[in-house]
Image (cartoon, rainbow, N blue to C red; front, side):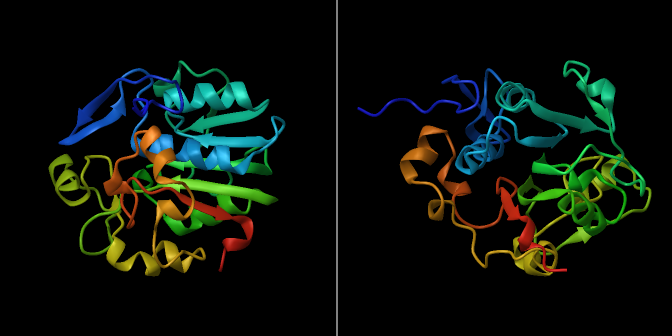
Length: 232
């Protein structure tokens, strides 16, 4: 009999349902499927402990693991009060032109951050990507659903923002239907998203990555770009 799936971040075997998705949230560290998938990608990079890591909007469990693994770990966000439990947080407003970060970095990661930014997301991704070392990697996740890309930088009511973008503080959403013209216009994006090209089914099941996240661009997908994958 195969072992029960466990969180590859904290080791817990307790998972709970979220929004009709069964057993996707780790009951111990709060990792989602995309968080555990990001951990799989980081493991596959086999970075040295001295690697320089920049983590935005740091997830609780993943942040603890990264801080223990890498001696040059930096975490940042605009809302420091929300992350008061994480020591040494940098205040970073990604929409400001002149923010400073202690780069370059071997790894930059952020999960479901871009949809919150009331500014040009392409400029944000470009600036972050240019902070990578020659062998660096940029990992991120974004909301992907609906029939087309949509954005509004206008002042919307909480009700309208939630209706259009899924959450009151979101300003955009991405769609698999035209992702080649959004993310794919910035980076060399694979035509198809297939996790089994990088990880075995056994590894994915062991980390409780549900099969509906294995193929096709979704909000659970993790984009993994090298510095040379920038095409503009």
